[in-house]
Amino acid sequence: MDFGLQRDSVTIQNLKSKIQNRLCLCVFALLFFALLGVVLVVLYRDGDQQDAGYHYLFARWSWSEPGYLLGVWARPLFTLVYSFPAQLGYPAAKLFTLTLCLFTAWQTFRLANQLGLERAQLAVPLLFLQPAFFLVFTQTLTEPLFALLFVIAHRLHLTGRTAAGMLLASLLVLVRPEGFFLAALWCAWVLLDRRDRDSPWRRVRWIPLLAAGAFIWWLAALLATGDPLWIAHNWPPDWQTANQVSGHGPIWWYFLLLPLIVGPLMVPQFIIGLNFLARSRQFLTGVSAFVTLFALHSVLYARGWFAAAGYPRYLVCVSPAIAIITLAGWNRIAALKRSGPVSVLLILSLAVCVLYVDGYKFTRDARAVDDTVAWFRGHQRPVSRLIYSQAYMCIRLDCGPGDKPFLSSDRKINLERIQESPAQTLIFWDAEVGPKWYGLRAADFESLGFTTLRSQPYRLEGWFFRPDWRYHGGPRRQETWLFYRERTTPVRFTGTGK
Image (cartoon, rainbow, N blue to C red; front, side, top):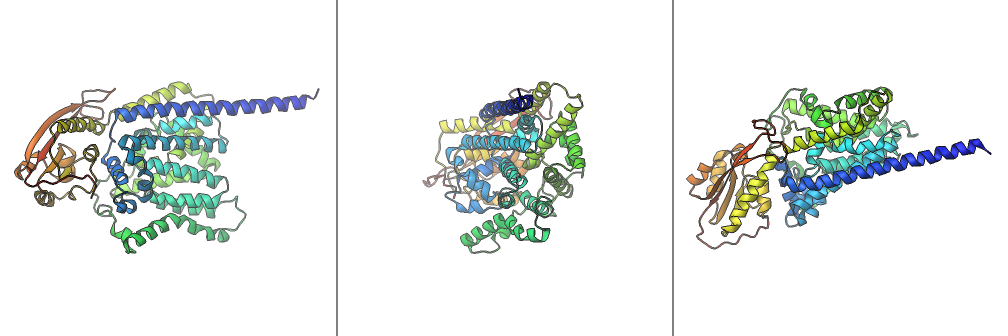
């Protein structure tokens, strides 16, 4: 008997068994987070910020207002991709984000296998259990789509399909502004890639591929508008280097946010993984992508540039790289026989994520909005124009983002524009976002001659976490109003978004 062949056969069989076990655990994790995502969509009907609702509105009405497909703030590729599920409604668009995130997790698992990492199946929970990722994986924000394109392009680059990876990476700028900086980083990856036998000078000829997405955007805008500088002219007025419209903070702000970016129980694993990969010169592409965005947003928020608000969700753009780095650290700790029970850490991390999402007070406003909409349906009046303070109000009444007059932070101009509103104008306002964003309160509408249809205060608490304090997780004190300008001429509200 050939014992050598027998040992080889056993080794191959063990390897197949190991791969099958990894795959089964990965599929189980994906199914678990898919079910959990559906629950989150049902419980939290809106996002934690206004951005999610407005991105949905731009996507939903882009078929009748194609200009939304070119918008600098709306982002062309995001609006195009989401324009299809958005036709089915807000919950469908949120479930579409969930689907994208499941694909991102699958690609992250495959990337871990591609890198030869042990426990590759853990890449799935290590992705979803990043609190910032968990917060947005059922919302209509741009970061999840960016993360999916990033991890696929990354895998293409690492497998030697450099041109395909560059083309896909060029599309990142059509989803989020960070795409410009990652394209510059990608250029360095290509020029410094030791696997490529061509000299760096010969590789330079492929660099224009990284500008393909931006060129497509510019060409589409030129053909649609005839203005070669349309993108610059459409630039959001608060995306400047001098206004600090979203505030600013210390340069170490994102170090403080690290527990929300990688997970409070995963910070040690992440730091160990980052140090190990950097010192051993492994996965330097993923490490450099994280460091680039981490440093970029630290500087932007410290200077208050381009409306950078210091949100941890900005790092969701490279969340697959964060999951791989954390997994590398986990494996290093496990190799030293010092890791705790895997299930306990994952369960505790899940509890942290659930409490993080449930504690967000703004997500609860959807309940007040739904209640107010239900009242209005029972006391229906003809509406020619809807003016609202929250995007979800527009979503529930199925209007378009262009139905209301443009409102800014200038209170005086806002009052003048609202005063010009036609008969049958309905104003749907709240006690926080309205005064904070537009400087307008309930008394202002009454002074303009609007009739108060309804005023309702609310005390909104989390589904699972109900501490009686003013901080994260505490009760949300909110109030909504409906104001109406009485009908003088019959005008039909079309809801076309025009």
